[in-house]
Amino acid sequence: MSNVEESQRQKKIGSVLQRDLVDVLQSAATQGGMQGILISVSKVKVTVDLSVAKVYLSIFPNDKAKELLVGIKSNTPLIRHELAQRTKHQLRRMPHLEFFVDDSLEYIDQIEKSLKGQENPIKDPSILEKRKKT
Image 1 (cartoon, helix red, strand yellow):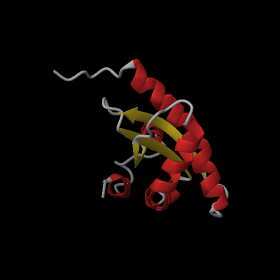
Image 2: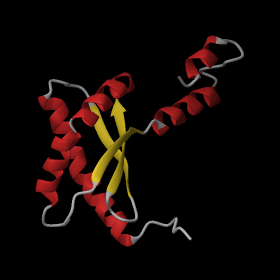
Image 3: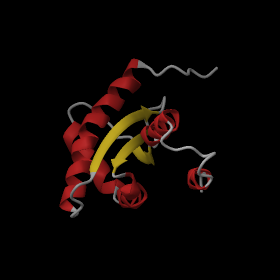
């Protein structure tokens, strides 16, 4: 029987990683010449065996998200090493990192616009085409 609820240890490791990842990712983006990019870590989920951390990122502006995610994934070993240095007194072993874009804020924004009547797919059918997932 699998335990759906995260253990205190999983939550603690997730919050430690979340706090330090924001610094690491934001400074890497700035050093990489990407000014005006805001990266936030919306959630870190650590597996039960503590071997993998799934990192969910919110990136603003959103049109840079895919490009930035590719860069982050290609630099995962460096990011993991930097995190290990920062957390060596708190974590014995650094989990493998998997990065995902958290587009829930964009989704919420779309719902709000629809509810306010700013985007009406009945009046403008092209909106539906834009919303289709690729």
